[in-house]
Length: 74
Image (cartoon, rainbow, N blue to C red; front, side):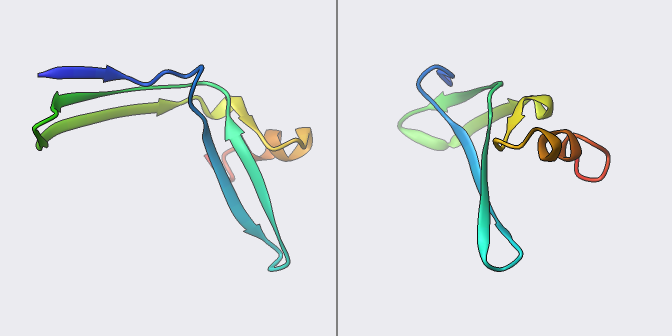
């Protein structure tokens, strides 16, 4: 078995969500980690673990980020 670790310095966890049917809100998570364990020749026997820190959300709008971290969303 091999283990591949997500390189957070060379990776991005981002998203785009429609807003009011005329635009979209883009954002990303600054803190995340993950790994894949498996055999490169038979990926059906692989497992993936991935975590993001919700508090690290960034949408370039501080008030929205605080609201997204509330119980209304996460």
